[in-house]
Length: 238
Ligand code: URA
Figure (tube, rainbow, N blue to C red):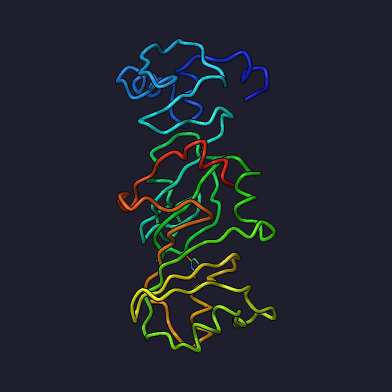
């Protein structure tokens, strides 16, 4: 969306279609069904001209006026963080959105990992989340095949050498939930990193779930496969 458009404004139905990746007719339906509010008041006027001065919400979620989309999904096991179906279906099938071509993942999860995944078409934003220089902490809940020894916890926290890698992992924070369940916070995003870290200390990850990225924590009420737009505050936290 150009700077001019942002200043001079655009029709509400066009804005909703762009910000949600849906068609203009779907956007109109959302507006007419009372799911859209402008400046905290439900607005059913599809042709209202809105600008970046307005706060526009869809079902209570503030939509970004940049025209970009920022999505949080609780990824279930059994689907892949890829834009296309391969051996398993793509997470994109769960979104039910159009215009998927520019959307990409801000950090992927394995097919058998569940939890918080961020998706956007704003490349600079996703770069700030995934680039190693920004060191965004990601927290995982790990179910293991064996209890972790105190020594293994110390090793994981200090950094371990992964198989086929010359550089040890950066320091991590490990907390014990119970004998077979741990939380681990890491700031890197190496391939299968958590599974390989636990393998490096002689253990095995049975289940893996991503709970948070930076200060953004997955809503406990979100069911597997459920998604929502991020709020302006959440977008700006990266
Ligand atoms: N580490 C893993 O091993 N798998 C994931 O999906 C994410 C982090």
